[in-house]
Length: 550
Image (tube, rainbow, N blue to C red):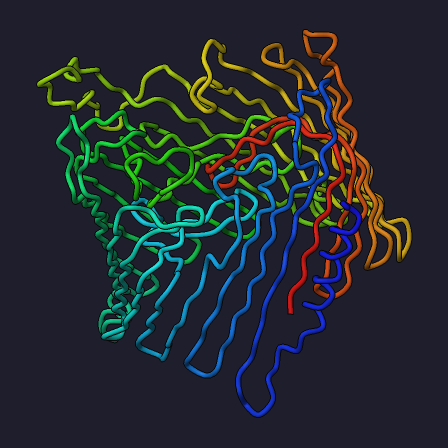
């Protein structure tokens, strides 16, 4: 049964590939893409893999878009039969979850149906999709963009957010305005010289009827934000401040304290030198279109994590998730390229990067006002203050070096401090300290064969102890690859849990079709993208992934 199921999926991908994107007679173009992820699960008590009654699960998507001049339309069909392990089970089902019709000329764009957008850095509004996270908070309604005068851009959106296969109970309304001062008039551009000045502001509100039997909740909750962006040769500075009125809901323990956030980012680059400095203050800024929502459901805004996005399995073992109820964080990232022909640059140059990030609890004073008759403000906050409660800290050094035309490597070393109680909502854990080192070696054997060897180690005294990992990947020509990885938890204090997580994979790519299949064990862990995370349980079994586009 499983074999027949996978063959059907593969045939469907093939049919999609052979569709013609260009319609005859000037009737526009059709484009699309297809993706399916499937897994067959074996019971495995040694790694704590849960029993899956269906044996095999799959997540599938198909997207079609049509464009003809100023008009466009599209839809996305999704199928979860049933939802794969690690994704929110409330996705269970199938149907058209995204459809839109749009008109766009040089000045005006109108979209009816589902849309994605972002105001500023997203502190009060961002709708987007990330299939790897199982995240989609598109707005189903109307969106308008308008350019009434040169340098002036306004846009607005009105509707309800997607919540799995239904819509959130709250109506979300918002608008955003942005002025590029240089474009307003020639004299403005002359006065500013090489400086490009951008000012912006936005307002978002939600309406959800108060039906709480105990509390008096605001039916309408508003949030506003103002931002500044100064761009000069080599320099870019961005600042945004956001404020939200009292918004009692489940995620903030139904307190009436207003929320606020500040995001700062500065970058400098010049001839091989790059510097990025960022800081973020968040206080009670969970903003949802459903007061009772949990997990990642109903999020209206986006609070990015100021941490390095690790890609290696052990350096990414303890990722950080933004804490919307309160966090003060900062990050510094320095990159430099030693020139070719220098002592440290060698024949091809050498790239190095030093990164530091940290997140702390904001400095608050609890108020004993949550009882009957209390104001339910919860606490007071010292502006930009933080206490000794560390949420996350990462310091790391990375070097990339091309030694010859046939050999290059990446070396990474670092230390992470991780507050599992806060990030994963656990209790009783100390601050976990882990030291990791990675050596990623790539050998070009000949014109058709490339061998990659990835060796990793993480030393940790707490939690599940130390790990070692090794990857061997062989790329054969333009179309094939095979890979094998072993992650070994040799430092687990429970000897029975010192398990090898072996996984083998193979893949084929031709044009826009990519098929990968694998078999092995997957350890439990947290998967994060940009500060938004989901838990991935342990599993053992076959995996299949097919993507194609046209």
